[in-house]
Image 1: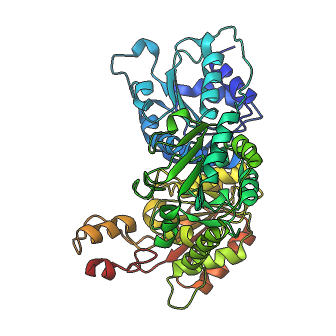
Image 2: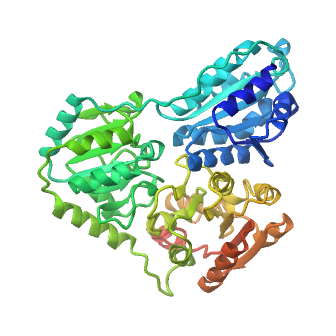
Image 3: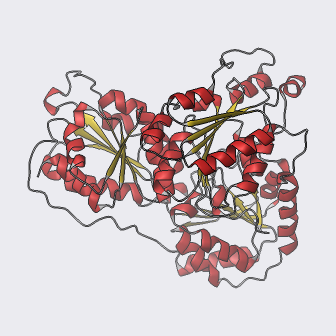
Length: 542
């Protein structure tokens, strides 16, 4: 069989059902092999960055590797943002990139670059296949590396002359994911340390999602009445209406919620790398606090904070094993106080004085199904979502911890393909949406009924906020022109609405849910209300 057919056979064996791409002549044999494979659907995007975001969003929603294909240096450069997002978000992804013929390498051939070297710092593994016979071995290893340990992206470079080459192929077993569990000695140590504390706190991260450990986390927290905070953009790992939920640690988090972390005398971090955003620039965890850190990745332990107890384990296995602790629960009052602090900071009540952004979140929370799935772009508009939206079910949120603009709508396309029965809604600012707006046509072409909310204030709002903080009134490069997103959507064959008040939004959202078509709702927002808590004038005065 040819190397190209062997690549597709590996995909099939690994259970791949969707492949995202922008077609390129450098990997035509792979496309031809995909044409002959009825079990795999190929989604052709308008831009490689959009294709990569679709694959990343699909992987998060499906809990299986996303697969994306692109051509040589130009396509590879365009999709690099998706690879970086998958790396920072610990998302399993396998990227196949066409490469110049091996006999042209080193001559600065057409669109030549050393792809494995280019991606080695933002991928778990980057490799070039130079021998057709080794395709099953290398591609099988790519899928294994992408999914095991801390998940992430793997990049496979495919020289043009290798793809049509024939060889006798020997396929190994499909990937099985190891699920390490804490040792008996580690469990004894955890039990001993928890017995000494009075204000414990769980910080739960993306490892909960990867391990499908949401139910185990809920059982563990309930068993010992432990309050739970979630790390940056991992909202849905614990239900927000649960009395032990105490908040989300992200951008613009209320001081009272951050104080929960500061006041804790013991932190049990599970499946989180304790990132810069989660820890507020590495500032809210102190050496005086005890730290138990559980993560699937050995290198994550001690990378930011040295733990008193570091455990390399699968989150679900660890939380299940920890159910056998013998503890005297003496922190119920502490958990209740921190829950009250969260409720006061995140109460979703609205008045006529509130920005339309908050009304939008209020309407969504009360009208769309609680198992609807939400994606978002980077931008200040997300502050209202993060602060107020009550995530009650698992697998209902997908957001980029990398902070990538242009992510929300393509990720929604991938998520909808992974879970077609859910209502999928993306939230974007006008700046971020325009970076991948062309992918709305992809949704139309493949009849993928996503709902896109575009908060339009005619500027790069987050950067404008930082300008006003550091260089008040010196506005440069952040103003944007007028675009009718409603008309843009219509020109691509999608439904389009424009609203400027809560009732208009409520009506448009109801139509969007009912229509079951790709739909865009443009929400005209107040430029002055730059964030959840500040206006431009308040920033300048400060």
